Image (cartoon, rainbow, N blue to C red):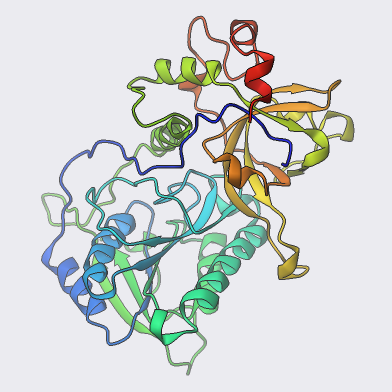
Length: 388
C-alpha cells in the first residue's frame, strides 16, 4: 500500500477496555488449578477448553496474572474468532503480555505480535482455513519463544466453546498439533455439553499431558454449575467500536457512538491506489467487474503476503480498516484505519470477510457513514488527502 497518504493525525493502537460488568468469581478449586499450573518447573503450554460461556476466558486471565510474576512475560494464543481476548472479532492472534490484566471479566484491546484475519465470527464456514491460521500462529510462537531456553515463554491457548460435531474435530486437531504440557478442562453439571473425560484427542497407549478438570465458577441454588450468559453480538459491536476509537488521539473524547460516527465520517481517509493492493474474498465469490465496488462500506483485513513461508503461507494481518469510498474511474479507494502509516506501507492485500460495521455507527442522523458522502467531502481538501 505504498500510495497510502493522509494527514498524520493517528496514534498507534492503545489499550482500551469496556467497564467491568461485575466482580469476577474465583472459587478455591480454580485457585488450586492456577497454583498447579504456575508452579510447573518449566514454562508450560496450557490449553483451556470447555463448553461455550463456561468461563474459559476468565480462567485464562486469572492464570495469565499468576504466571507473570515468575516468567515476566506470557504468550497468549487467541483462537476464538467470535470472542477474542486482545484483538477485534474475526481474528486469530498471538500476543505477548507483560502486564497483569486488571479486568478479569472483559477483554482488553492489545496489539498482537502476529495476527491472521479469518473474516468470520465462527470457524464453521471454513475449518481448514481456520486450522491453517492457528497452526501458523503456533509455529510462529515455537520458532521465536521455544527454541532458545533463555527466552522460553509460557503459553496460554484459549479455545472456542464449540465442542460438538465439527467443533470437536477441530479441537482434537488443535490439541494434536500443539501437544500441550497441561490441559485445563472446565465442566458444567449438564454432562451433554461437556467434553469427554481423559485425553480424548489421543489414540490408546499414547502418553498425554497433565489433565486438570475443574467446574465452572457460577452455580445455582442447588449448587449446579451454570453457563455464563453473554450478549455475544453486543460484545462484538462494542469491541469494534473500541477498536475504531483508536483512529483518534487519546485526548479526544468520544463517549458516545454518535460522536464516534461523526468523527469517523469527518476523518481524512487514506487514499489507496487499486494497483497497490490485491483483493482477497475469504468466504464468498464476487464477479470480476464488481470486486472494487464490493469493498465499499465494508471492514477489511489489512494484510501482508508472506511468500517466505512457502506454498502454505497465510498472509499476516496488521489490522482492520473501513473502506469508506471507492472511485472506480480514478482507481482509488478511501480507507479509515487506526493502523499507523508506517505499517500500512507493507500492506499489499485487502481481505474481505463477513465482519460487519457496527450498526450503531451507521444509524446516525445527519451522517451518512461510512460512505464518502456530501456531508464529508467539503471538509476534506486536496491538501488533506495528499499530505504525508
